Length: 273
Image (cartoon, rainbow, N blue to C red; front, side, top):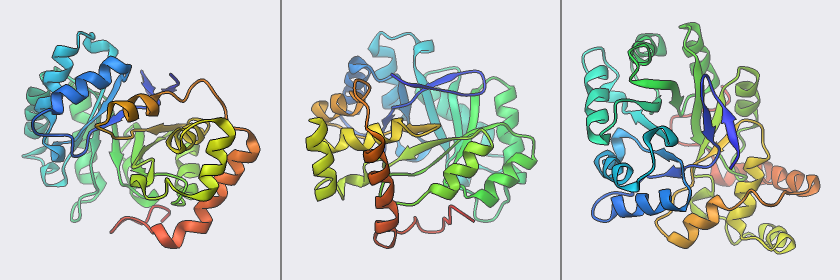
């Protein structure tokens, strides 16, 4: 496993995304993922699975300090009266005393970061979160966060070879902020791409493994692919015993420009502004 250095921590570069892993069986899936070697679990208040993750963590037999646990605060809870109580409720559901990473899930559509990032910092000071970060923030919004004096350790955004995040990624690297990639496999939309199949055949690896390996060879990139399939879970974490040649890294890099009009960006988010 590759680790990305953070403030006072190291974060496993591949984690388990858990969006829509909820309801009956969710705890069992997450516990099995931990059994396969996942040590980074990502969730959010929105996902409605924090209790299931808490049960899985307790039943896994893995010590708490060996799990990097991240969760995200929904924008409606960013107000002064709701932020801290919502985090305490999250910790209760997860059955932990702290999370390793606490993120603001989306920028608030009415409040500026100067209004809620200081509360996030205070929660960190109280020891309820070891590291703090954001999700779906563009460069302008990240600048506003940094003006508060916050040590933002990561920004979680959609990132894969079919969306061009180069400007955002480069800016974040220059400011010591890691990029955490959600939907790193493009929700499977491009897994039958002929160019990807050609590279996959060259290395005798699956298309998903090629894409995740491409990310692992990027600077300060963390990936949190999601799956409920045991074979896919094992496949996604088994990318540290081979390396892509530079020519193939360059070829995959080029796809971002070819497909930017197809994928676009998420509604309301202009990553490079």
